[in-house]
Length: 303
Ligand code: FE
Ligand code: FE
Ligand code: ZN
Picture 1 (spheres, rainbow, N blue to C red):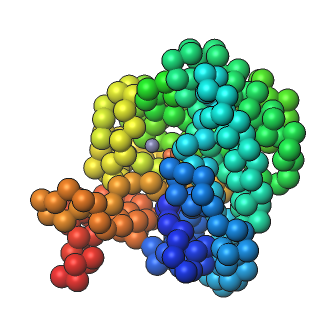
Picture 2: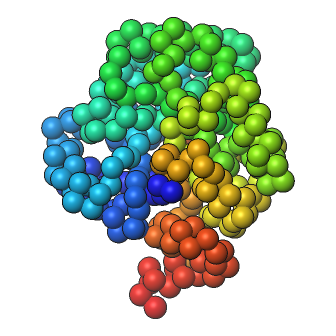
């Protein structure tokens, strides 16, 4: 199992800091955004401290990591030409940055159709990806994330992702990022029928198309179309379901990334403490710890 979490990138250390953060969690892999996920302001590649980060990774044996594109990219927007064009242009530079950093996977939310309907959304996404792959044809693949179906999100059904593959000319540039919270919220029954969900998945894609897993529990019941992540074992999917997914044969070489929420202080709202070291340890042990969130708090507060 190759297990890690989302980590930050900022300050003076930039990408080197991301690697150090992953190491502090005892992770084998990690995921970063190349800047704030809500905007497209980005530092020059030369300022990211890539060489030092790579040296650190090879020192500890971290072999791969993934990058997540910002959510403001919306290739599904057929209503606003600027939004669409901005998405295309930014995605090309993001692929170049991802390549410079040394990852082969850039995770992308396929897009939202903003009220124009799923068919229009899909054809707009296809158009956008075709424009992107006319300009970028390197080693980095775009992993389309399985979505929760919140608002007008495209890609909550495997069939919708498959239609995107069908439309994209150079679709060997595409992969899938399988988000467990989103798949649950989209209506698939991972809890009672994990095998059945992957069997359904295989109707559209071979499982080797899964380039990354986002391992999140869900705060909401199956089919809620909500997208609110919960800590592993503290949501409606539960520890056993998530562990079963981690241990599936075909995922043994696939980065599994936690995007679970930070833990607040007792009674507080603001989420302050990273749970990843504890969640990673718990998953590796294979035993649920009901005191996990309490332990995260205690260690963070030095108690
Ligand atoms: Fe995502
Ligand atoms: Fe995700
Ligand atoms: Zn999510």
